[in-house]
Length: 449
Image (cartoon, rainbow, N blue to C red; front, side, top):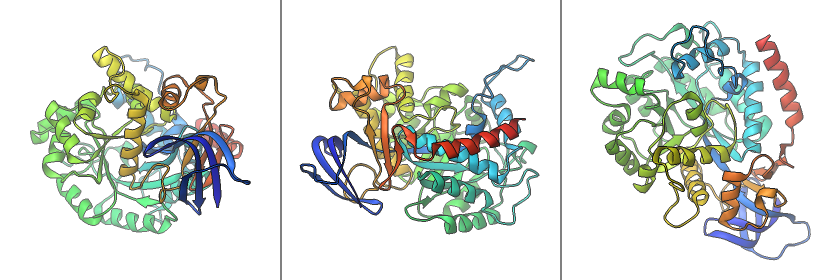
C-alpha cells in the first residue's frame, strides 16, 4: 500500500489542497481531504498521469537520423522519411526492438506519460518470414513495458497492402505484412502475454494497407476494445483515396466502418469542415501527435473547430523524435496560433489554455486506450508530482501551474511519477535509467556501426 499526502492535487472536481491518496495494490483506494499522517510520503503538487495514444517504440533509435536533406535534392517529405525508416528497421533483431523500446518507455514516464498505446507493426523477421512464435516481437514490447513499469495497451497492426485497392506490399514493408489467419494467431498469442491492467486492441494500419473487406473481418475478429487506425495524415493519402473510392479517408471510415467511441483515428490531419464535425459527433478520439506531425511536415489538425464541436482528443509521441507530454500539448496550441494568427486558441472561453488541453487529453487518452484516468477511487495509481522548487512554478497555483508546465516548464519540471502505485521516476529520472540507457547505447552503437 502506498499513501501520498499532497499539498495541492488536480482531482476530477478541480484543484484541492491537503489531499491524501491511498493506493492499494495498483488502484487508488481512497482520496480524501485530510491532514498528513505519519508514514505518508509528502509532495507539493500532483496531477494525473497521461496516456500516450500512439507510439512506434523502435523509432526512438532513429530519432535525428532523417534531418539531413538528400544530396539529389527534390522533395523531402513524409514519403522520403519513410524510406529512412524502412532502412533502419531492416537491421533490427527482437533484442534490439526490446532495448530501444525500453528507452522510449523510460523517457515517456519521465515526460509525464504513464500508459502507452503501442501501434505495433514490426512482426516478421528481416527476410519477411514469420517467427516460430507469432508474438515474438509483441513479447519484446511487453518486456519493455515490464522493465520500465509503464502501462501498456498493445495494438497489433494488420498491414497487407502498399496502397488503396489492395496493391501488393513493397519490399520495405515485408516485416509488417500479415494475412487474416496469421493476424488471428498473433492476436491470440499477444493476449496470452498481457498481465495486470494491460489491454489489447487492434490497429488496421490505414486504408492504404487494409481493404474494406479486411477491415470488416478485423472488426468481427475483435469485437471489444480499442480500434486505432492512421487516417488522412498526408494530402497524398487523401488524393489517392478520392481517386480510388471517390471518398476521403475519414469520410469513408465514417460512412462505412461504424466509427464510434472504440475508435481512435490517428492524425486525421486533413479534414473538411463536414468531416471535422462528423468525427466530433461520432464519439471517437482524434489521436494527435503534434511533435511528429511538425517534424514530418504533415499539416495542421483543425483543433479549434473540432473541440468547439465537442470532439475528443488524445496525444501521442508517434515517431518518438522527442518524448515530452507537455511538448505535445504545447505544439497543438501553437499550431492553432500559427494557423489563425491568434493566442489561446484552444482555451474554453475565459479560462486556462493548458487546463483545457490537459483535461481533454486526460479523458480522451484514457478512452482511446481502454482505461479510466484521473486521481479518483478505482482509477490506476498513476500520478505525477511537479517540482515545486522549479523556477517555472514560482508564485503559481491552480491552473497557472499547468500553464507554466506546458508553456514554460523546460526540463526538470516533473519530479516523481507513480505508475500503478509504484514510484518509477524520482528526481526527474527513471529509477532504472542508467541500466536501460546503457543497453540502449550498446544496441544503437552496434546497429549504426
